[in-house]
View 1 (cartoon, one colour):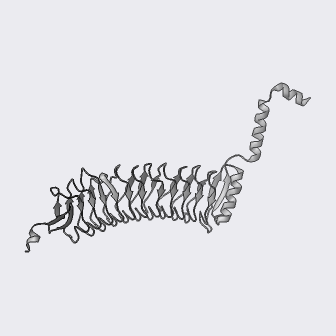
View 2 (cartoon, rainbow, N blue to C red):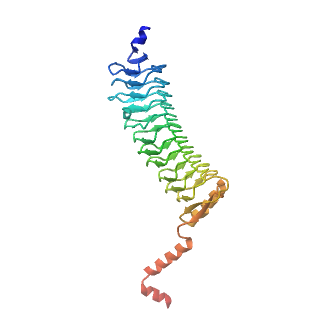
View 3 (cartoon, helix red, strand yellow):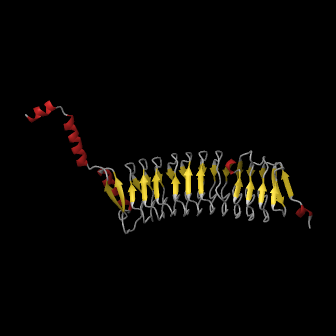
Length: 342
């Protein structure tokens, strides 16, 4: 047997772990002294099951552990914030636990993509960025809580997380990236933060378990096909402040039956609520006759008039005139009313 197979081969240069090679199942590096795990440092270590990094390690570079198919546990530094570069743990199909994940500061593009058994991570107050497709295909994730420190999140970061059931966001993010939660078939609960002003195209497309949705007043724009294909969505509430629904924003939602539209809603994109006929039209409720006329015209222009019927829940103009007249008479002094009668 060759000597390098009996003892781990560790190559460190300029505070960077360049290479670790061994037939051992555990890489205990807690006594080593380096700052970064270098690019592809653990490439080809198919026997590796657990890794412990030293307290000095603050960066894991591109593809450092990519394809370590038996890797189940990674223990990050407990004293230093850690940044992950792109594809750091991509295709680690048995990775289920990441210790000290609350100290992650940056998660690069596809950093955990296709980690199929990775369970819920705890994101801490140091997390600033999540890259594109960072958790795409992480089928075991059931809950995501995005911290207030997060300022940037990439396209399709949590796409195709088929077991994801709940998403909560603390105030911080302003824009939800395109296809962010696309294809999360089990997503039932969404809690949007007060800081979100825009939901980009396809952000929740195909979230077929979603039954109720409330868009808070701060959300001004809903992008193209943002909620298309939410097949079980029944009730939609748009709070006052929502201004624009993009093209086909709620297309292919056959169970949608109740829509509460605010006066702030000015623009409906082409086919905002679908184009074809449905067995039963959804009912959109509006507050006054002006909105009634405007929303009917908008639905006609966008092609969704066959899918939605607009109804008035407030008082008509005539009813308001009568109420104002009645209030005026009640406030008029009696002696003035007597003089007018004479």
